[in-house]
Image (cartoon, rainbow, N blue to C red; front, side, top):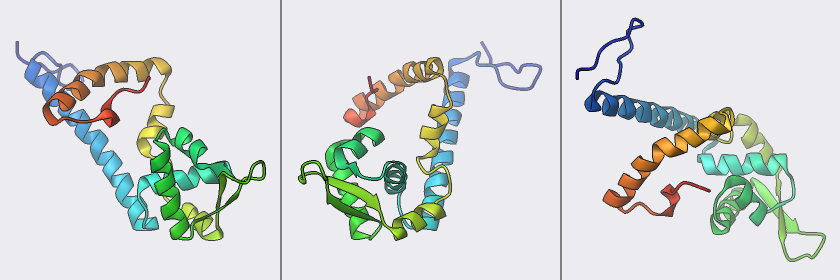
Length: 168
């Protein structure tokens, strides 16, 4: 069966080849949009998206602990710790012992961190996170189901690790 065009001119997915082409174009569009935002963040702040996202989380909740930051960003605590170390070394955040027990460190933006965050083009938590937050739960579940075969194939062909597994 050949692909046909609808009255609006859009290609109907009548063939496997057309469906694959459409999926590839959609993924390329997502990638290009994300890449443009990453480039804009680097150009304006000198930081990558994860660092800007961490700054935004700390601004929203001053005094976060590393574990709290990891939860909010859905990353491993060691990754959050590495982000905080980089931000602290760059003078964008400061830490102080938690008042409750003095063992945990609370993270706060410095004036330079606030200034850097103000320079960052939006969205500061990334275009994908914002786009997903605007989707319904049902739409997100459809997306997860649709991406699962692709992630499975990437894992079997390229040995992609846990970072590409759907999150429960």
